[in-house]
Length: 614
Image 1 (spheres, rainbow, N blue to C red):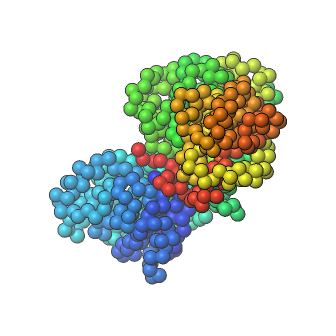
Image 2: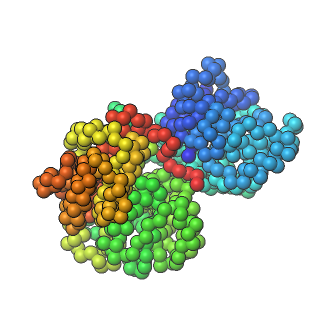
Image 3: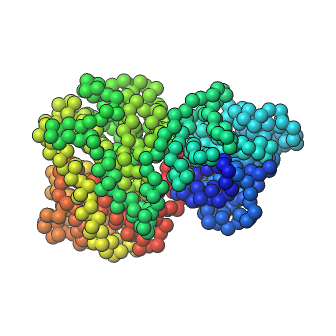
């Protein structure tokens, strides 16, 4: 995943593009670059973060049109030469995605005399466009328009892309295009933006158009036009973004991650707001295009996701099976598409993706559509690619999440899965009205209970600092708490770089106990429920190996203190809802551990916010 930005307007482009790139830096930060168009193209780029790029820009960089890029390496190591933009003659290109047939195109262009400087796939786009525009490497006489050159190039490349490009001989034009990689147009007053995320330009305009696959956009000072890959004019609907840039800034917190952890009372509330009626035990999901009869006919659910969303899906498995009695499988998106799955029209596929742009999840859900399966997308981004591929779209209302480690989007995903599972259970008649009422009442209490945890964060910080220099960490849980153990381990390893693993409690004797040594910290999620006694037995097994146990337990649990070294408390709630509370504790544990170790919390090494390439 990378961040791209293009600007056309009446102001100097360079400072605007730099400001936009800073807001996109969470998408990639190993190198950055900028091209400004003013009668000719002028490109500057460097390895490192945006501040390094800013330092090398000349003061007299003039021009009202430009493109910029912040990179997360996929082809070629992080370096200045591999950073974007990539140029060929008077053409400059920035690109997010992967060109799958770049090697064959590169070989052909090299035979034509084009000299490649980088190891990237993106450079083939620039040289191929030049070849289309001028006919050969040495010519300076056009044989077609700049638009035609891009159109012809896109018909030849295979893979995914979001592209913005400028040409020195077209001083009033920027072109943009997308396929399987996000691209959004921002429509300001006599100025226009093309970006991979609305946060790039939200300071300047809230009016946007979401670019669809195989669309080409022309951006001039006088306006924007949209075309399909064949050059036919398209009419596009404008959308107004409801949140402002302050929602995407730190608001006084030291890190975005801490800000986003603290936003969870609001994001959970906003996700269920208007959807729950505890008076009659019903759930309102007007955006769900499934009738009660169709729900009753579902024979199996297949949840597809990656990373943190996969852990949310594992919680969903327990919910759909426990509440609605529907057999549920959970598949990793990157494995699903290669597994020759057994699918039919009575199977429901649910894709969970925070960004709506996760490449593997998108490919998997498109595969499901080919089997005539009904599909649901759970996502946080309005207008993202997944929204065009699923039959129904259920939006979480978490707002923008800038920190690479998912926090509020995870609890928002869990909230939506609870809502959906209750909806299915009521439709299938597996949950009576009183049970539904009780669960909905308790769900509405969750935001306040999360706030209580946040109010006692100092206790979690003290615990984190005590174990911050350990080399290994283990997390254990049973039933619904097993996926939360996985998520806790994922959060810790993502941002603190401590080796961390999550296990089901019953699996300890099948290998993991061999790894537990004297003093090893083990987090046991031991909230009250029908497997409470089982997790106590696991804790005793762990303590017998001289490990130090940190328990996540209910505030009214006095028994747990007898068996563990440290207790982190959560309010009591329905057993099924406890993951929403336990996970907040583990997020804070990971955050304060990383803080104590001096790690880069919002931008952990080797990771980026969404994985938009395979």
